[in-house]
Image 1 (cartoon, one colour):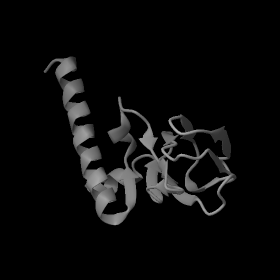
Image 2 (spheres, rainbow, N blue to C red; image 1 turned 60 degrees about the vertical axis):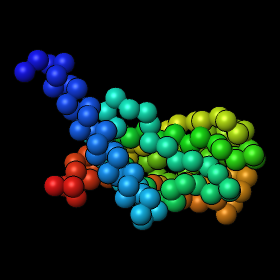
Image 3 (tube, rainbow, N blue to C red; image 1 turned 120 degrees about the horizontal axis):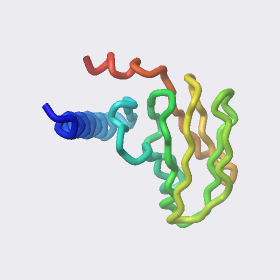
Image 4 (cartoon, rainbow, N blue to C red; image 1 turned 180 degrees about the horizontal axis):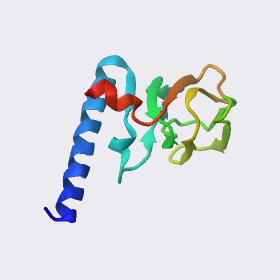
Length: 135
């Protein structure tokens, strides 16, 4: 089997797994995304809309890049003070997306400086921990 064929099969499998995960998100309001499903794909998205983070809870593997597109009419200022995953993306308007790579396992509480009621949790786990749930 040629390497290009193997690469294509891996990418198709990753995309299929991501579709399954997105289906789970629609049913439960939470999203679980294995790092393998993110290969050759855009960052995991947490949308800011109607003064909420959507989804409100997500589980990703360590090393995942997470993007925060602002789809609200208002400015948002995404940040976290969680140990090992501290970040502040600053204030930005509708149509702008900012991203962060999460490098340490643990719960990451994400908030908005401008809207204190906006909160969500990203559960960051060691690589391979999510995969076991799908075996």
